[in-house]
Image 1 (spheres, rainbow, N blue to C red):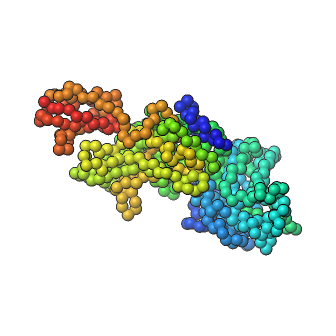
Image 2: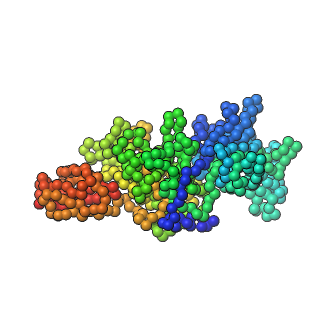
Length: 542
């Protein structure tokens, strides 16, 4: 699949559908710490994740279980039944923390009949080491000479009423005449379930060539993640989120989308706390409030709209991750700088906090304006092999300049080039997070929110920049009374600064002129804050 992402080059003419879908990643399932698991001992009978119910049957007398458990254990070396909850890969698909373990069999029921795209599966540590080496109950696959035609497979049976369909995935196969082709799966692999068609439930069972009088000798476990993950395609497109179905001034914070939001092939991870009614990761927003600088306005962009004057965008909070199709195929290297980009803006809540300060965070620049404050968004992730990707930085506010007149807090959508992160990389997960100068014992004091739109879109107007490339004409120059600003952007504020850096005049309005008649003759800077960013010019006062 060398051409996996070839159609990314067609972004200019093709806008992707962004209808919100679902995927069970098991990340939202609450476990009691690291290297632990849930096996149904609470006798709940299973759990919901995404739009599916994963059945569990726990025997309280024998303290044993069948069906599905949830785990974040990482032991890929310990042999035997005591290590029945670990995945051989030691991490979930996309290098996430949690995954499901199927034991004996696994039944998944759906909220309504539908076609399940697929999922990622792999071997558990217990089963892998048993097949590699053999144990007291099961044989070494291939036998001593490697010629035994052994296999271990998962069978998915789809049900829709009384109708049944089946498909099979081999997690180990030693049936080849050429022994060099024999394998035991030890990575996450995609299992296409779409062939089952419309189903209301799917039953996963296991079969092995190594059987005895009590059934299968091979340990009957496998691991599953990203249930209902889209099949990696050759028609990947960028996202503009406009078809998310949100009304103006509405949003989705994850309370009705367990675990996150699936847009085409990309899953935006969300963690929603039902007790506190709070969220982290990603939210989907069409909110327009640019004035409320409190916590209640935690999903609005300071621009009041999406990029390109669109309606819908994503708001990130904390560490926000996007899961990509988990494949070894790479995004192609391109000569065009703008091929891989996204639009970034400040959220209203942190913008107001940085501008004015609040009960938790300081006003950027401090009382004198000389504090070297900053807020930077960092974007990185991991590739298919678990290698860290390059990190891209984008400053949403920067007060580190010696000349305070060029300090800024971004108030517009700005294009960020992701080529260093994406091009020629088999991206598995992309992470976004904020770092800043205002920190305390609990981390960042500045509200850790930001907004993203036009994800991996290529546009003719996209460019790679630190500040907006806008120009401003000033006339008359020299000026005696009114000084006019010739620029196409909407003006928010005008400041007149003398050569010593002192602000002599400030005007907050949309007027493209300012009265300078009271200024002492001399040379001054004009700093205009606009909806397209900040621009600076000079004029002479007569």
